[in-house]
Length: 77
Image (tube, rainbow, N blue to C red; front, side, top):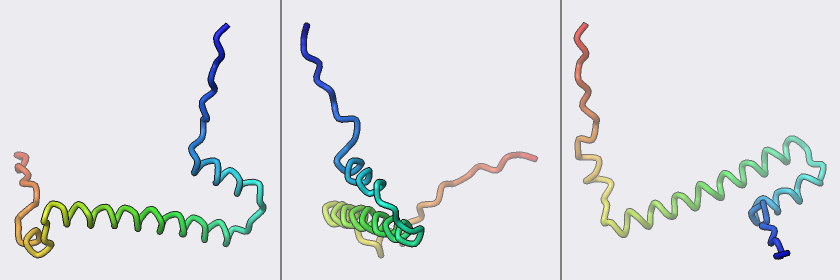
């Protein structure tokens, strides 16, 4: 009978967060942890977006000058 390899159902982040669940923390501390995680992922997204802008040579002033609204057709009444 071949051996079955069990795959870990959780990522390393999920495992780390599961460790926090065993602790009793206040609602205030929970909000602080949520805020910290949100800031962490927002900072990563901003850093990546800045890298893409730099790589593609985007310029905010030039982009803001362009008309980028979607034209909508009027629906007859």
